[in-house]
Image (cartoon, rainbow, N blue to C red):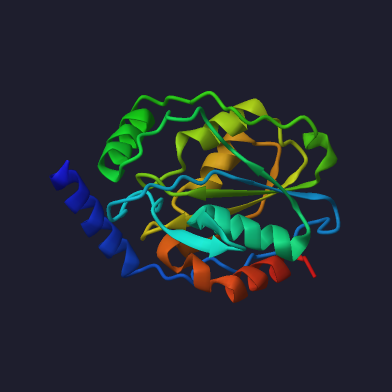
Length: 217
């Protein structure tokens, strides 16, 4: 596992050389109906120890006396800025290991087996929303499997879908292409927002610029 983690760190370093927090953070065109009701859907997992090179899950930021993981923090900033509702993608308590090394192994095996975990948080009013913003960390250079579970459960046809990621070197990874493949009838915006998890707390201005580009005023 140490060799795998070392490789992940080296890969993240190489990706960093050609990727910055400012890359891909300005959408190519605004969405059709920014005044439509918006929902921020996100998956955020924190672990208490370890240096997270492949999952971006360890960063924790304070928000109104609460500790939020990096992806949750960005989701909260977006909701505060747009007035959007929020929905957290969750699986059963204890499903994912707590410590970093065990989580990294588990996430890799889950990805390789294409396991879509059962969700414990369900939406009953998705039809109310025209705009869906999906937030995810990058685990092993792709979206975590609970994102697939969410896309399995809901039809986003005809909705505007925007994507943001938190990562430690992989940028947006394949998040946009995964969502386009799983939701071919959705209007998935071509350019998402991405930030390193460790830098998420300093990205308020960049988040606002992205939202402005989408048409949120």
